[in-house]
Length: 73
Image 1: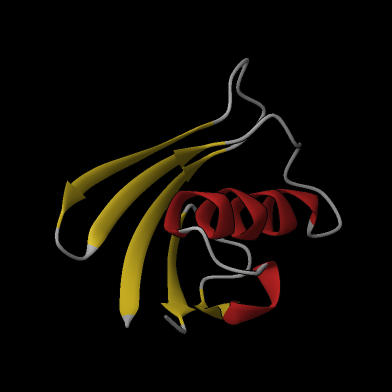
Image 2: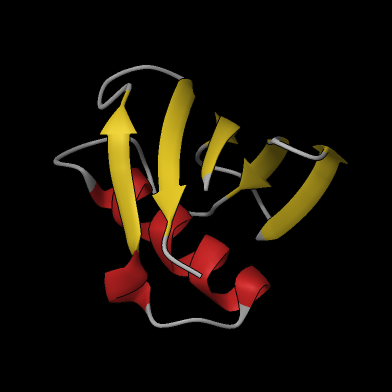
């Protein structure tokens, strides 16, 4: 399943919030440098869906706040 994610990096908290069936907002503490925020978002999504991090893939938006992730459930 593909989901649209709005990322809020450098946050004081880590949280995943479902907006609707395919849209999520994710807050992560990691800074958006060297892909650290993308890794943190993948880890947060894996925890939210209770799956392994290897089953979460960034499809689009490597340098954008709006990203598309694929979840292999």
